[in-house]
Image (cartoon, rainbow, N blue to C red):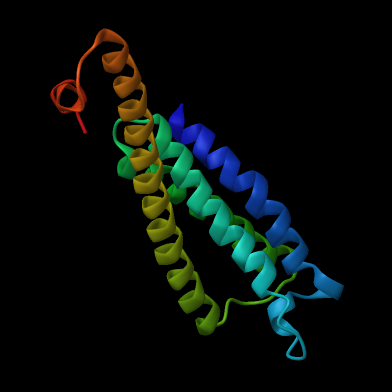
Length: 152
């Protein structure tokens, strides 16, 4: 379930961003040499992978594995959609530069997703420690008792 939540979040942000980027005035934004507007959807997609990883890390016991699985699923969906668009809709080939960018994108997506999951896990641990401190203080224990009861 954590993988699905993470993947849905990434897809909800990245698909519209990539759709706008790919259909900007009839061709992809990156193909317009006079503008660097393609950076905006690329940034949105990168942030969505980080946020998806954060969701996976915040809610799961194996954050990096869940984030990697969600990112891999989303990357596969995005690549298949782009290949479909290029080969069957636009009737164009896939240049080697695009394949290299896809490889870079896959690496970046996995890296950002895992980084987000580790951040999410860290936030979970801080939240648990904070609630444990409140419980122990209410029971009259000191901060040293928290370290015995909270597993990081």
